[in-house]
Length: 70
Image (cartoon, rainbow, N blue to C red; front, side, top):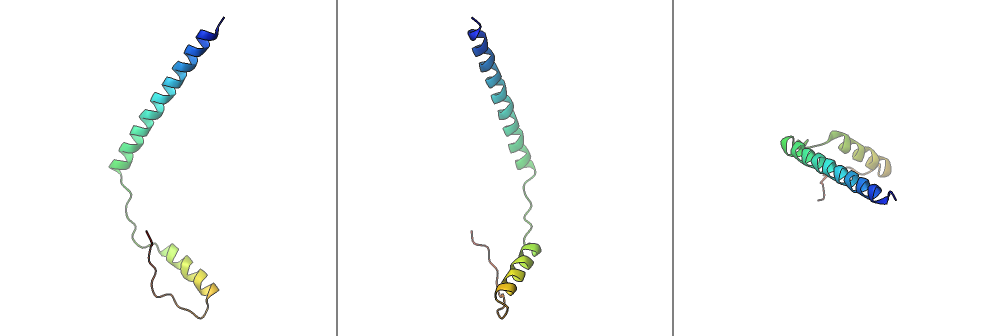
């Protein structure tokens, strides 16, 4: 019967895939730490989209302040 060979091959393949994915996770974490996301501040495209939709829905109203809710 060949089933012990199949089990050992499956276990070794699972172990190798686990090791490779763990190494990739460590590399991704290092890249994220070395190159952090830059804060862009105000996003003019978002503001203009909000303003255009707001003016289409409420043509007689005016936007005075836009705040991000966290």
